Length: 216
Image (cartoon, rainbow, N blue to C red; front, side, top):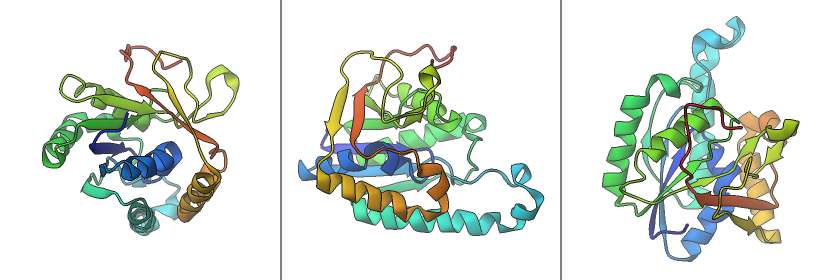
């Protein structure tokens, strides 16, 4: 799962911490470079916000990316692109996002692609997973678990089912403390990140999904 040049796909600023903060640290320890692409700005479209929230949308976006820059610096990642589209709209921008990822792969010379799992936790995560699968013929793709509600319970860093090749990284006390600090850096998402565990992270080679059906 650890290449020498890894490209990480981030649907929303904070997914890099939720799913793979410790893994990024371990990749660096092995001498890898980690590049990233932000696929949305992490804030809903203006028209889907409450009327009294709409005028401050640009402020919310700037705050989210200020937090992302702080986290990126702490993780030692190199940003290649920021796709300025609202969260929950990635499915409407698939062709241009595919081109963005292709360009990032070319620029980075990545020999490994990391993506959130196809698990039904958020539509943008699932779309990202589908887009990553389009590059599987040219570069190894690994997915990491974030969160889902399979079996009618909240699961954090746990796949909905076993497909083979799973790698579970048990975090050390230092890694757990560091992950909690990085989650706290996303102050704007504090309420949404309460359920995120810090005990382990889960990766596996991208399965051959049927994207025409639900994840679970």
